[in-house]
Every structure is written in C-alpha cells, then in structure tokens.
Length: 296
Image (tube, rainbow, N blue to C red):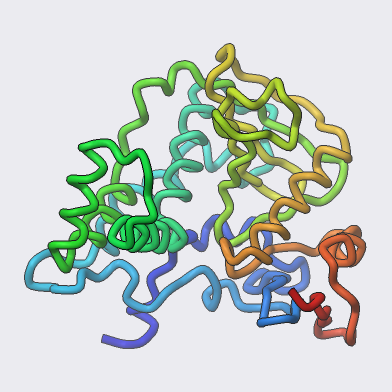
C-alpha cells in the first residue's frame, strides 16, 4: 500500500476546499506552531489534516481499518447531500431546519473523528491510571479499566464515535444560528469549536454558562452557532464584526494550545491577532511569515 493511501484525513478534504487559495484551489493559507514560533505558509490541501494510519486498528486481524466506512457511510453521503450542495453554491439563504440538523450532525462528526479526540481518550485514560481523575462514576471506571486492559480498546472507542451517524436524543432541542460575517472567517484542522459548556464560564457572558454552544465555520463568510440548553430554533442572520473577531481569535488560541495543528486564515486581521496572542514578527516574505512567541 502506498504512503498516499495510508494518509487518513481527520478533516475531510471537501471541507478544507472551502478555504482554498483563490489563485490555487489546491492550496490553503495555514498558520501553525513550531515550538516557540508561529509560521504562516501556503500548503497543499492533501498535505494537512491527516495522520498516517490513523484509521487502522493496532491489530488489523481483530478489526479492520475504518477508512472505507468513513467514506461510504458519512463523507460521500454528506458531501453529495442537498445541504452541502447549498453550502458549496453559497446558497445559505436556502438553508432550512432540516439542513440545520444535518449541519449539527456534521459538526458533531468533525469533532468526534478528529485526532484531538483520539489523543483526549488516551490522555484521560493515562490520568485515570495515575489517579488523577476524581469523581469518576462506576460506568466511567469500568470504561477506563477496559481501555487499559485491551490493546485495541482506545481505537475501538474512537472508531465508534467517528462512525456514529445517529443524532443525540436532544437533537430536536437545538438552536441553529446560521451566521454571515462582514469579515473573513477562519477555521482549523479541528474545526468544531466549543464556546460554552455547563459549569464553565463562557466568553459570551453568564447567560451562556448553562448552555452548550459550538461553532463551525462553513466558508470564508459563513458559519453556524449550535446551541443546546435553551429554546430550539433556526435562523439566518448577520453577526457583528466583533463576534467574528472572537471566533477567529478562538481558532488561534486553539492552535497555540495544541488542540489543532493548522489554522486556515488569510484575513486582514491575522497579523494584528498574532500580536494579540503575544507574537512578535520575525520575518515576512511573499511565501509567508514567522512570529516568535514569548518565553513561557
């Protein structure tokens, strides 16, 4: 099997193409962290958002690769759906409540199939084994013991989430807010952002503290807030530039903290926001740029 065939993308390429360079549709402008530097450069879409062998089980004889299943059950059906056709055509005004459910399912899928989720499973299990997890329920304890006792268990758990096509029972209670931004939006190779979760302080204020809120950028000027815990609904509206700036900066924070390898960004506020994040411009050329981060 060739190396190309073993490149398993944890972000579908049909999604990454929404942010392709206007002069070269096969490339995107990326920002990534290299140690104490942040580097901006154009990269091929096929060369980002993948991990070699990510979808292969540790023991292939026990359970096969999920690469084919991901393509057949999720990627191909969604990329050819009426919802994605509307998004690809820029026909956001034609989206409706049924599309909202599809978008919710896609955002949830992007989160559950991401390499960050696989790493989170491994990190949480390591914390459990080291005694670092408190208030663990009996069900969680049994799960972590199973993860520790079986070599392929972490892959099985990751696989079950990535291939799950069923929406949660509370899907009918979601509020979908399709948003048009007056400025260019960013995304990343971990594109579904968590903005609020019950029990945590939301950056949008106390009224969001009891809500589960996600964001997914859909293209350079459109995105969606997905809200659970409040009244259900569906709407399409313009968001303030200040809200879009918060979203864009959140992607930078995600990258600098290691939750995403690449940010997809070519907006006019990028350099200002890199300075906001603590970076200092080291060099810049037509091909890209480099910022130094402060010593931690």
